[in-house]
Image (tube, rainbow, N blue to C red; front, side, top):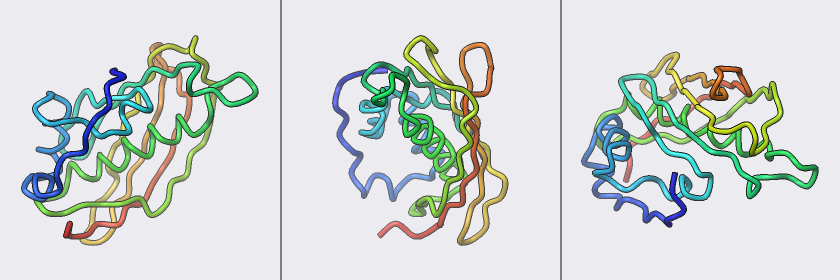
Length: 157
């Protein structure tokens, strides 16, 4: 993970690639990562048709007032991996946005949790809607949170 600010990829470049090409390019470093990755201290590490894996490192900067990582951190990792999993199934010039997310928090996260892994897996992608599930685990494989999402599929203009 890096603290360096990331510039978004120009929209023309995004339109020219399939979702899988875009995800793999961000993972291998040939394309810049999404700006939110620096803020959330997360990055993609693996992608294939219908799935993607992110790693994150929760820290004190992600804490809520009661001394644990804010639930929004887990929700953001899961929303990101689930949406990007749908994107791996989309052709050039096609994008997505989350319609809804449902997150279940299983365990508290602190900076002592260490690295976390978020995996998104497509359930179904149709012409207009994709459905997906995601799981957030710690380094020992314990589930920290899990969720589902629906994504609207549209032409990027």
